[in-house]
Amino acid sequence: MYQLATAVGRLGTESAFEVLARAKQLELQGKSIINLGIGQPDFQTPGHVVEAAVKALHDGHHGYTPANGIPELREAVAEDLELRHNVQVDPDQVVVVPGGKVTMFFAMLMFGEPGAEILYPNPGFPIYESVINFSGAKAVPIALSEDKGFAFSAEAVLGSITPQTRLIIINSPANPTGGVTPREEVDRLVEGLQAHPQVAILSDEIYSQMLYDGREHVSLLQYPEIRDRVIMLDGWSKTYAMTGWRLGFAVWPKGLAETATRLAINCHSCVNASAQYAGLAALRGPQDAVAEMMSAFDVRRRAIHGALNSLPGISCVEPAGAFYAFPNITGTGIPAKTLELELLEEAGVATIAGTSFGRFGEGYLRLSYANSLENIRESLERIRGHLENRQSGAA
Image (cartoon, rainbow, N blue to C red; front, side, top):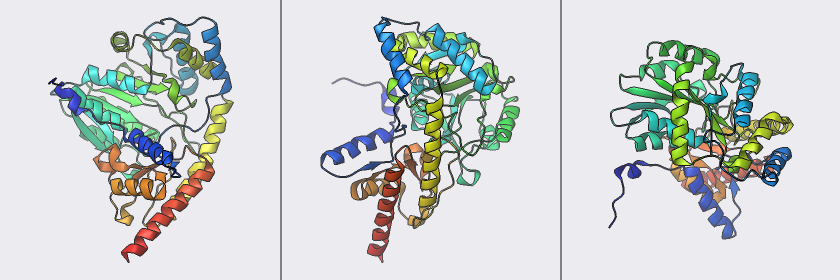
């Protein structure tokens, strides 16, 4: 019998895809399911972006591309970052990859090994902890608290650094909480990091254009004092509704861009050519679709926030970014995973237990409001009915 490498057993998963698969099974059985679990926009990729990919195919872009991405796309990324963040980026520091997870994997491979420590947000995107464990490093959670709107605490991050710390992962706007860290907290973190020059930072900014109520996005690229150790992750999946195109990028420190490119060569060779031309059109074309999508998300955000706070045993801070609500369910007395399963199987609403995002997620659910306003309202009424029936049954 074959024997797998020990590291494979340390890999976790992303529960949203498991819930999606079960939801599809239930739908095939004839059950009505409203999916508030999966984290992807329910909008179509803008038409001009699709046409750019089609044109690229007709124009003969069928072969390999440079491992770090076509030059035009890397230049467009640099232009976009200067426009949005007022930072100048060398296109040679940009590495285009098939989705944001690849950058995470590359960073863990570079910094994670037995004896090393990597700090990550908890509750946070589950792949952080999974790949840290896979690398052999120790995953050190940074607890995010509801009373701070799920923004990270600079004091908590800095207080967790030890001589073994190699990498810190920062995510704002955040998945699964919708939390956004204000500039003054980022300032404090950057100031404190001056005492730890050996520590690199992976800044996951995939939701950088998804903020509400006039909030600003603070990119770690804006801090020259740490630019030489910041890996900034971003991409097209969320902003341009391009999850299935598998297209992301990272800005690497000059000394690591070549290493990331070498990993790309060993891993996937290069990114699909036509998808890169689609990404180019997204950055350089009209941005109307992005504004329209965010306007719709804002209406849904307000609706789901208000409805959640009217449910028995549930309270919810208002999401500040991304398209997730992270309600506190401790008042129901139901463990997160139990409520997730009940809502899916009995109420026909797909949600994700907070524990899928780390142990500090107990007592919470994640709901994605990347669904229609009608479905959001219907799903919240189903949840209300389930909770009220449960209460009356227990009485």
